[in-house]
Image 1 (tube, rainbow, N blue to C red):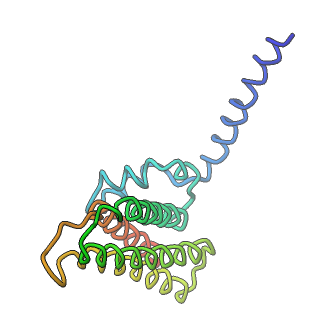
Image 2 (cartoon, one colour; image 1 turned 45 degrees about the vertical axis):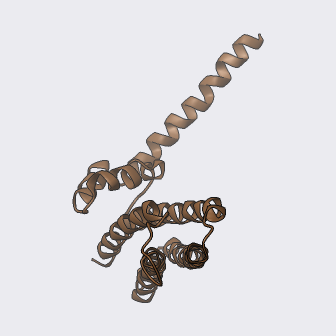
Length: 187
């Protein structure tokens, strides 16, 4: 009896998942549209990896949903950078390195706040030009803050390699993708 119950309960979640998947797919953005969108970006493989393969794309209905995914991925990169800052802070012994990492921490916090604000406005799915402008401003403010951190490693003394370049490049690419999505929302 117990084996039969276990056997049937395993099928129910799978069946439910398949039904939900099929139902949600009917109103989802076609995957070919996502691939075509990614082909319009400067970084096709990056776009497909971070946007096209995101599990949320299965239920994304439009570019507003795609924007939410892109800005969420950007927030993840910023959060990972902040974690990295906290992990490497102790390894920077010189005053210049400490000042630079301190500034980067401040800038990445600004970026996190800015990208979160853009995400919140995007959740409204408003067609208002004021909301679109605020999304654009907030996204740009977040990107500018990340750039200020990256630039800091070549100012006020000897140039050092930024320990956050990996995150900077990912945020740069995601912001380029986000700008393209915003342009599609405005069209």
